[in-house]
Length: 489
Image 1 (cartoon, rainbow, N blue to C red):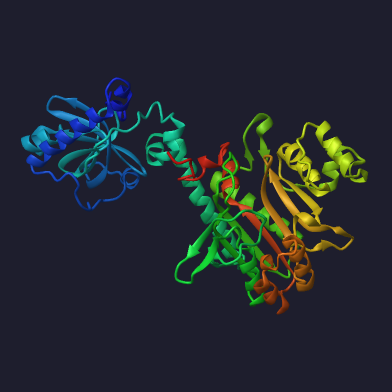
Image 2: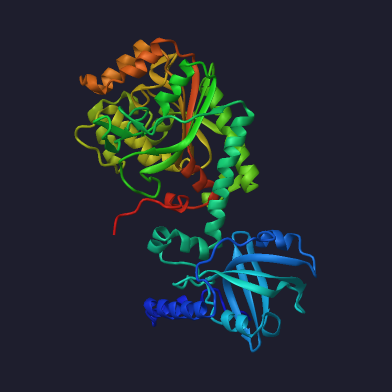
């Protein structure tokens, strides 16, 4: 049996890591005396490991490169496995084939080193496709050992801080991020096929807008001005509707200077989409089609999880008004209660209510803490209070509600969608109400754009990280972000 993947790490409990490093440096120096460069250059390959395996033909010449992940010495021969991003492949090194010096040098190779190898393809007696090595090169020396493959990397702190080790030792983690990349491509392809134009809008803004969140603030030296990392691209994308684009989207980062949790990272990926002459129904159809397309195309299923955690994305998805859900959970008379009555009822349901909260805030606490997490299968929560969504149109039959949806899947908000407010006078009124008498908080430039005429439109945002969490079956947002934010050491 080959030496297991990165065996040395198992012994680290009794042998200090620096001893491994010193031994590897000694091996590196010995290799250099034999004419091998520890950190070489490019190596021309026949193809990746996966490509060579797919086109395998016994007797054919091949040049391969990868990380050495297993070794077994048998006197005058050595079996090894090399690995790249596409898989692993067995190589066979014989002293009488490569020569005494090259064999002596190869015996100094450590697990984790990168090598290039050239030789002839053959099949072993055990039926394994292999490469009989004629020549080899050292491409990069690993000075530290890596985690044991059969145990994986269990230390959560190391997994996030040193993601490269997580990727090397956990195949499931590699699959999550590979599928994330494929999902993002599938989203773009889906939208391009429907004539949406991908655009880029400013990451640094003089006034943060498009959502209610605390921004990151910095200073632009050249302009001697404070600027903010954007919390949302919405107001710039709507300017493009004014400018004549019918269908636009942006898939990029947003930044919110708020807490870390299982579902929140201050730097996150968001897809925002706007369609002129559309409405909230347009967006409902679009998000249903888009998510089911990604699920089928990349993950090959519409059903995820198991037991009570099962999520079935099969359409049609449930649609229910916000007020109906609140009444189901907090009582049929909830909206007839005054503020004190709502506060008392909420506290009787186990919620902590701040003394300065108004009726909308108390109701939203009921929704977020007691209702949202119970919505496992896709649910469009519609007709939210106007105070919660100041950039959406009011419902034609109810001026206290806006024509929006919040798509909840797996107990988490995945996508809000609206019929966008395009009345500049009403938008100004809402901005001023939000600003609470501070004119500097009113985005006059956006209002100027609206006064030039924005078409009726549907708009939507999709939290990519949360969507990938659901499709990948993971419980923490850090598991779908390659390098999540962590507390500084």
